[in-house]
Length: 368
Ligand code: SF4
Image (cartoon, rainbow, N blue to C red; front, side, top):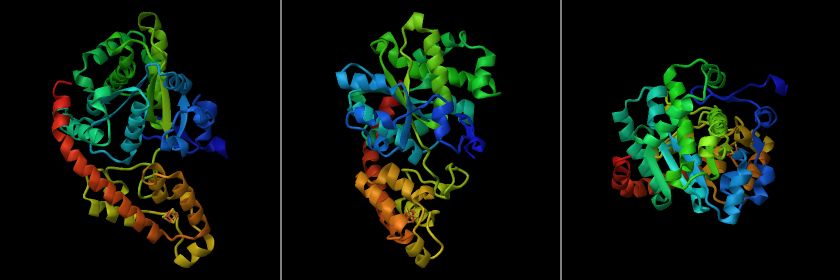
């Protein structure tokens, strides 16, 4: 029964989504599908339903079509190396940048400290690595701004102003009972999301924030603050897109640092990544004979997710794999071997490009 299925959206904790449909009916998120034909040159993850929902994306699409100024804003909590969840957001930022957006990329080092206890000296080193990944993936610094929260005075000033507009009861209702640092970091994130609309960056403009669905509380909180501070800043409430969370290699819904076999990062040895792919859970049957007769289940399969989210360029290949899997025309061993090669080639090339961007990453973060 769908009413028994749980939805917990918690940017600081465990997110559980057992029923994506309820996000539309109860959380005010709009489905992306009806808008797809309106989006110029839609991004791969949009076409495939990986990005499934949005808030007010129409106003960003209008800006894209009319050539008006708009922005894309998102970021990373510098707690470790780029993994496959991070990659969805980054590719979407680069997509919007290529469609004309000015891109803002925040290194959320205040959140890394408040949520994960990572000292600023350490997060700075992690951030250099993250920024080199971002540049290697195609982020264009000429139309982009990368910064650390702890060094960006405009973000901190906005957070201070916003704090007068929020009661403890309101922030508790959104984030639950948390230590003050997490409430502070939520205010800082609101500053991040609205900074592209300050006069320093050309004033109010439609801004899209691509995030995982677990980050929606930050979006709701910030949209409310944009309304409250409209008279002072003329903020346009930020738009957002939401992507599904990619399955971990063990088939669960959360990649866990405690289990390194449940995920891989773009920094790992390609041979180790291959090994992890060969060890991954699948939606296959216990024997080849059963699989040929009954077919597999791509819906629960992390190997299928990897193709769907990242590693098949062509939509036709995704559909073909889905059908071949369902009909038992392909076995998991051969499917894993093909994926392992594609991923290893991608990671090797990414690591080669990344090495070329390390100095640029250091320079980019030196003053920010
Ligand atoms: S054939 Fe591929 S998609 Fe289907 S269950 Fe096996 S690994 Fe997953």
